Length: 171
Image 1 (cartoon, rainbow, N blue to C red):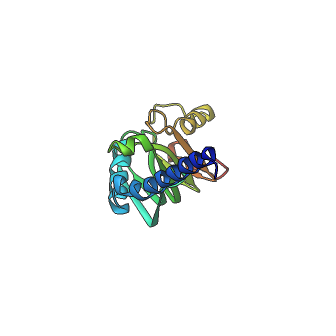
Image 2: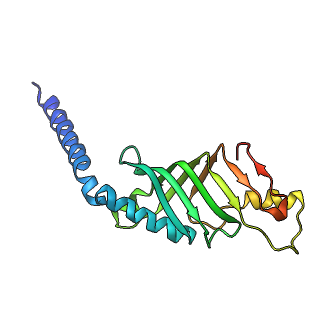
């Protein structure tokens, strides 16, 4: 074997050992799955200011991104003024890796499939035009610290003061 080839093989072997060590150590740095789920619930509660439940079977993925999948319920969020509740059986919370390695939970993306969103009743003095309804729906998650919120095939239930109708199209 030529000397030039030997150096590359050692470099490749070192890189493979480094990757395997990272894969083996990473879950220990972030804590076990139950601890990660508990910390994620606390971060979601802080984010929304309401009662958060992760329901159903939950799965934790460490590759390609750190994510928790499962059901999601949110009731009476103080930091999301127009929202009364959100429920989805298929939710994915992608966590920020650098913050996680630093010991903090930061939600990078929130993906909800088929969420059921119920809006709060507004004050009777507020106008109830179609523009106001569209603006309320567009600004549901305004002011949150989650970088990306994706809703797919959702259902939004308007309050009685806005007609009480249900919007079933893709949100």
